Image (cartoon, rainbow, N blue to C red; front, side, top):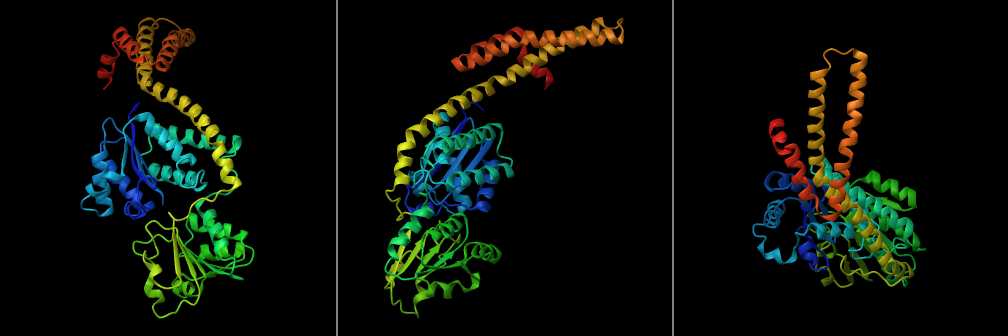
Length: 423
């Protein structure tokens, strides 16, 4: 398992939105893809993170699985030839680089809005989906829990998560600017996924407005509307709501655009309408601006504004990186010890076999009370005998010298033969 962690992925840094949306996966698609990986790729563990900004596959394997993963993504997403997209994918074949990448992504260092609060929850979801498909093994379990603990330290010890500089907050900030000339803007929030709900909550900062919430699950829309003092609209009436709104924020997961030019074919747009497409794949027709009066902002258009919160986050990056390095060092020690744990177990088993065999030879004529005492004494002796080799093995791991000591122990106690016999 040691030095076998790798990753394949694309992100907003190298990949345009129209490509990212092709490879975007929701919960159902991620789980189906994990099953494909389990069946056709040479992996022991896997984790898939798919957000509006990235799709990344982390896995454990002795061999580079880049080509297999790319082909399987084509199968999962219905793409006959993935070679045209190969240039957008980064292949992280170095164990330490892949581990660091997952840390940086999870903690928000790689986010489009630095320190984005949503990413850690998206990683937690990805971890749960991996566990659901039995593809989160000992390595991923330990790695993810280390990341979650590190995130807790970042929140408690730095200003990296201070303020609200997320994509949803940036959207609301822009809406606030664009609607200054509108007395009471009518704002429609279409879709209540994580981003949609976050936008709805952040809209509270806009003082004068009418907010309408529309969601496939009408119970969720009604509950949130009641909580925030907004109005809920049945999902079947979204087209009418779109025509009446000054601002439309769409974060609905759909295969084809939900809001198209045809919705405005029989209606004249008398004033500007501002449309925000926070969906991947996109839920608003790409060329909708051909309709006079419609202005479209997608997730790549929304940039983080220079603010005190963002400035604090940027200033805190060196501190965050130091915390990550401390966590990486601790995790590396555990990871290296994983490599020698099978040898330690074999050594313990070999010594225990010797102890039991010798006791069996000599305890035929002793009383039950004496037998219990001898068993207790010899167990204590074995624990003390094995303590030093175990400590030496762990120390050798930290020095990168475990392999030679493993060979010595194998030769001394014939551990490889013991393993063959046990099997």
